Image 1: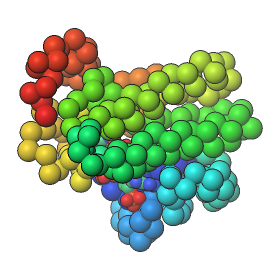
Image 2: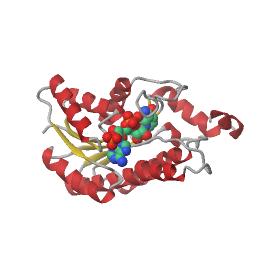
Image 3: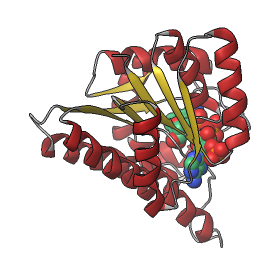
Length: 247
Ligand SMILES: NC(=O)c1ccc[n+]([C@@H]2O[C@H](COP(=O)([O-])OP(=O)(O)OC[C@H]3O[C@@H](n4cnc5c(N)ncnc54)[C@H](OP(=O)(O)O)[C@@H]3O)[C@@H](O)[C@H]2O)c1
């Protein structure tokens, strides 16, 4: 049977590039995001490159929490079954605490954390019935240390990472793998307005690294592995006087 992956946030950036990468590796694809027109264009582009690819697309807003189980059920039928759910949909707005931007902070948590948790919950319910599966959550190196101007984003990514760690222990020996990814800077519309993006890699390279990590069923990894595996440890111990200058 063809391996299959459902990717949320597949209309842009990492999710889109991973769709191309996984199609090239022979996976059946389920692509979800709010912009269904973008998904249909991506479907056509992938089919032009890989004519035998099996691709289903469907609108999904991960903040419409109650709809997620039904959308997952749609994909499980359209793709015959789902092996991997890539919990990737996310936003990065950036705001300072106490500057009248609480709505943005709330939206960030609602999308990146609660939306991701709702996606994971529906995926795990499906995988428990199926008796196997693989949840891949896209956290960030921002989970390693709260950064000024990004409190809600860092909190959302740290929250998701800890949630997935707990899940890994819950589903231990139940045939369900859990991978937590911590990308550094990958060139996408999420961050291409930022001037300083250390150790930036292209989205195609990021997708290829992520696909390798998924196929190896890694428990967790930075993306790329080096230098962010070292930088992650460093970020945790840097004094606040240094972190404060990173605004
Ligand atoms: N790029 C990086 O350097 C980097 C680093 C660390 C972590 N990440 C994480 O990687 C993930 C992908 O980001 P990206 O860089 O590829 O950004 P991107 O190009 O902006 O893509 C974000 C994707 O998320 C989808 N999305 C946003 N809100 C959604 C919602 N409410 N419901 C469903 N889909 C939603 C968007 O699709 P629609 O607008 O069509 O819904 C889009 O497909 C995010 O979780 C981000 O935090 C990225």
